[in-house]
Image 1 (tube, rainbow over the protein chains, first blue to last red):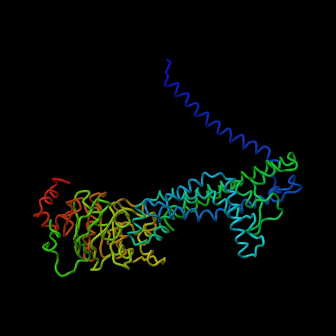
Image 2: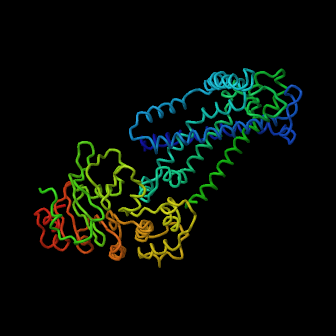
Image 3: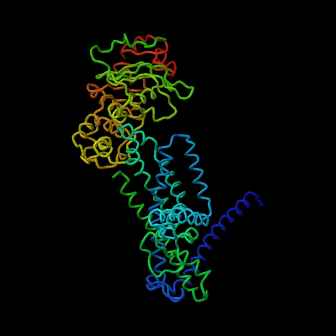
Amino acid sequence: MFDKTRITGAVLQGLAALACVIIVAMVAIILGNILIHGLDRLSVGFLTRAPEAGMTGGGIFPAIFGTFALVLLMTIAVIPLGVATAIYMHEYAPKRSRMVHVVRLAIQNLAGVPAIVFGLFGLGFFIEFIGRGVDRAFFGGSLVYGQPAIIWAALTMALLTMPTVVVATEEALRAIPQSYREVAYSLGATRWQMISRIVLPQAVGGILTGGILAVSRGSGEVAPVMFTGAAYFLPELPRRLNDQFMELGYHVYVMTTQSPDVEATKPILYSTVLVLLMLTFLLNFTAIMIRARIRKRLRYGR
Amino acid sequence: MAADPGIADAGASVGEAPLIRTGDLRVRAGRLEILKGISLEARRGEILSIIGPAGAGKSTYLRCLNRMAELDQDLRIEGRILLEGKSIYGTGVDVALIRRLVATVFSVPIPLPMTIHENLTFGLRLQSGSRDSNDERVESALRAAYLWDEVKDRLREPARNLSGGQQQRLCLARSLVLSPKILLLDEPTSGLDPISTARIEEALQQLKSNLAIILVTNNVKQAARASDHTAFFLFGELIEYQRTGKLFTTPRDARTADYISGRFG
């Protein structure tokens, strides 16, 4: 029998399955390619030594360290800012507030701004405006903060990832039953007591989910840090907030575009990409573990 | 319609001043008038029940008495609300204190996502900030709510493990721990089985010697058997306020008679 509906159904099912297969295949090809080419250079030395011989030898330890430091500083900046924004919008601002409307619109737009624009903004605002200003005010005009530095790169990255944290936190706040808030008030809680004892403990899982997304985004972005603090090559690790630093993503970028000997750097390039991927997974995994532990601890309060 | 239907001749117990009293209480939401000038009072040692069909303003009235109504920014509240003779909207009044003195039990049990013990001490910890476990106050509140025997060995369990009826008694105990002067109950037994309902009514009878209790109920029979005075609300107006026995035998207003006999609402 020629059954039109059944054939349409079968075709659509087939197409949907094909789409899934394509996605899985893409991931497998990318990961496989990186693994095959990257594994043979990967060694303890590669992870613990600085680059040598014009990037054709040695390791990538400064870049690993720099990425960690960058992501850590970014998290410290973005979580309080994003969470406070979301709490203000959801818990403090009056209903139908025009201000909240504007802020929400701004955050949605922020999420759509290309990463390279954040980089330029960081250069113009943090380095030229704030950094130079600080130098003029406290250091008699000598160059201390008015130059690319890890603190500016981290703050730029924090701006880039802030929408993620705000949206995730708001989502978590929305999921808390209004009745919990009413009960807290009816037992004599002030607004801040209600927020700190009921809302925040309940929202912690969602907030950390936002943090995880921010971390995985931040550890992979190159554009925001290339004008604001990442360096081509630094044998020293950053020790102060105004030091420059090496970053894995940026390291990959310079090795592909600016290496004097592309063929010689290729094996290192693959291994670096592999390390970058593993580091992103590791950061994600750590954050998920932390979230699971905190959720367990906070399930019934304290 | 008289301004104060029945207050003067309701036969309220003589001597003791009302603990809480509202005078010409009006609540508006935009153009809609939810309460149209309610004057009513409640005394220590009595249970006042408020009956009336849905939309009569019963819950809104309760929420005004401990300033929960103002959490809804759309509401405009006018009129006098006097707690022991002093306005609860006066300047310098501590809202948190008002809410502890005028405690609420909601229509559905809402245990906070904590252990039973933490639920009970939540309000106390807000005040002192101390980690004192307040075991005596917890025990007496649980006994007063007829819950002690059922939970005394499970205080560290999450409150949501309790049954619905137990949860509602936990909520009652959670309010009592704060030693309130007035207890507001908004249809506290609407979702409960007859046995749990009976336990809560029994608890209320024991409690009323120290408290003024205001009980909003959709169950006319509950008002008849559990309360000393009854007020009948209809579309934001107080239609009748009487001793419960009188209101149910010889209602003065025809609308009250219709409602309690089930002819409408």
